[in-house]
Image (cartoon, rainbow, N blue to C red; front, side, top):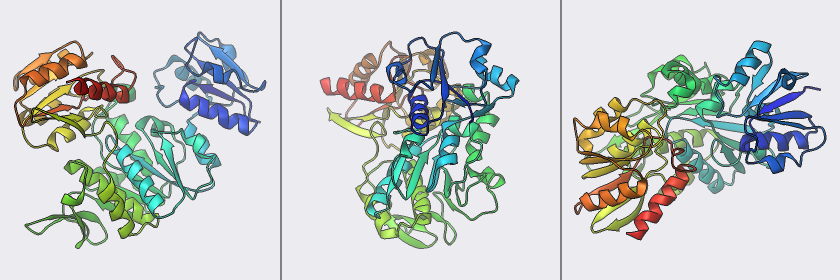
Amino acid sequence: MIRYLVFGMGDTGLSVARFFEKTAVPARYYDTRLNPPNLSLFNQLSSQSEIVLGTYTDKLFENIDRIVVSPGLSDKEPLIQKVQQLGIEIISDIDLFVENVTSDFVVITGSNGKSTVTELLSLMCKKAKIKASAGANLGRPALDLLNDKVDLYLLELSSFHLHRCQQLPAKVALLLNISNDHLDWHDGEINYHQSKYRIYKEASFSVYNRKLKESLNYINKNPRVSFGLDEAKEHHYGMLDDGINKFLAIGREKLLTSNEIKIHGSHNIENILATMAVAEQIGINKTQMIEVIKEFQGLPHRMQIIAEYNSVEFINDSKGTNIGAAIASVNSLDGPIILLAGGQGKGGDYKFFADSIHKKIKEIILFGEDSELIEKEFEPYVPTLCVSSLKDAIHYAQERSCAGDKILLSPACASFDQFDSYAHRGEEFCRIVGEL
């Protein structure tokens, strides 16, 4: 029997442990932390399992055939470099999922929008009475989904997942977009892009963004369909403009107008076109798609209008954790914008950030770890202010706002310098605005 080492005892590691318990696979579990958050649950594992914490010795690798690495752990980790030297096979939880799945699955990735698309697809499946389970990057870990008796799995995958996937024979693969993100983790732009494009390698059907012309270099010879905000050829998804209304369309066939969509922004129209392209391939008809699209109000912490106070709108986009997401959010709004941004950077290009949006905003108020680095790039263009906390940022923004302004939290950074997660940051934004 193959002997496994599982590196990382967070939620993904715990899902691997649950799967191995169910399938009676012995494993050794390791975490650099002496008290990882799920330790009590790991301690309930069978006697076939062994737990090692803190500093390790070479004994950790004895009789190990494969190592399952949690997605957030980069190849720069000393343990992973040691494993590579020893020639031990490195896999992800997604590899275990693929080796054991018995139903079709769809894979979705992109720098931005993948959670929106996954949720939309899940709702469309429900409308079409297709039994589907969604998870991986957001929601339940992939291996936990195998407990469900379903017709289809919807996997939202990050570049971290894709970096290590050995086989990914999806029924449909979708890459929404690419903006530079996690460059520090991937050690550069080229590696990050290649991790994203990897999604197409073994797919039976590919859905691609026409703006990403490089996609065609990675898509195999199997069928494919494209989406984009321009007019599309027959069978492809795009937009039509009759001078009065803008329509989401397949070729020349009009499906619905952009005014019938409740979520804001051209980037969300692009997400919806991509979702429809995937939905068609899994047997969902146009009527069912359109019904769901008209009802969909978006995800929490993603361009949520949470309040209007003194004729100023407050918008929660805490899920805008990278520069590309923040740019898309700013560009989706009309009217004067006071932008609240900052946090823990991911190696993004703040000069590009400033160059891309300074004409759309009247002021930027910054907080968190990278606030001064961001301020440096925006100072030549717009008024800037660095403050110590999100609360201060909100109060200063409210004081400086005028009727008709929009105060937008779209940080362009991770939250972990001051918050537990982007959701925690968004909840705090809503709470503080509520106090106004």
